[in-house]
Length: 336
Ligand code: PHE
Image 1 (cartoon, rainbow, N blue to C red):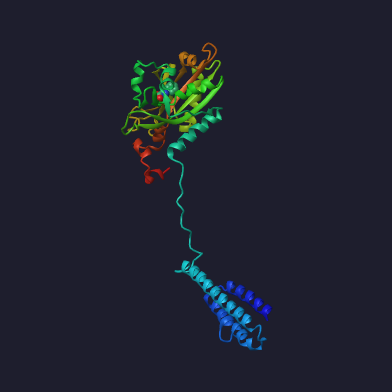
Image 2 (image 1 turned 180 degrees about the vertical axis):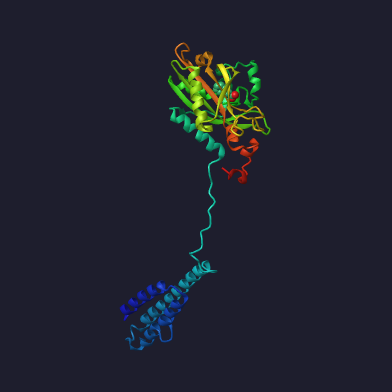
């Protein structure tokens, strides 16, 4: 009888676990613990058991009864928890799904990636440098000595004496040349900082620097490279022009304009009726810069350029104010 009781208990516990609704659980309870149930039957049958075994058997049967009723309570709680969670309307699987809102790449990064990919095709590699830069790399090494008036045009944030937030990506030219021998062909994306803040200036903005150094690099290569870039980025019909300019680290230097992408050069508000948009500064690397890098300026020549990513993004998408790029207003950002 003891074996029979154990087998019964095992089977009953299993069935209770398998009950998948309140109704089937109630049926199991009646079947096992009810007045006509199995336990009752066993307890009634105790009188047939030899007297010596009777107390132990009775105790065992009561224990089984107890544990079955606990198991039923526990299973009941489980089933209730599940049904609470499923309460409400039954699911309608034919409904269209809810649209998930997706993040995407910021317009500045989109434009940066597009520009870089054009230069990658030409064999340029990326290089990067620190935002917090020494005055040596940001100025001196680039042929801008301490008392030079050219420093005035870079309204500099000082971190502490001798250390600045870089005002351009040009210091990375020097960092690259210190580590590599020519031929060097790098593009350098990065943040730069100047004390400036209005509709077309942000105290932090983005530049991409370009540097190519090898034997016999001429201004023709600079022009050809930039022309290819402009045709790829702004389209085949875009025209370019160079205006003489001054940068201490290039000689000769120029600023490059692109025919206005909005009016095709006819003159409009965006180009201030000039038909041209200024997009970058460039020139042939100054021999003094090579000297600081430890390059032989008799053997090597090179060109460099620095373009403003924010400006190019604004031109491409007709964005009226640079502040839009940095306010993180989703209504603006989602348009790109
Ligand atoms: N660093 C210059 C600027 O920020 C741009 C530049 C880069 C000009 C490389 C010439 C060569 O204004």
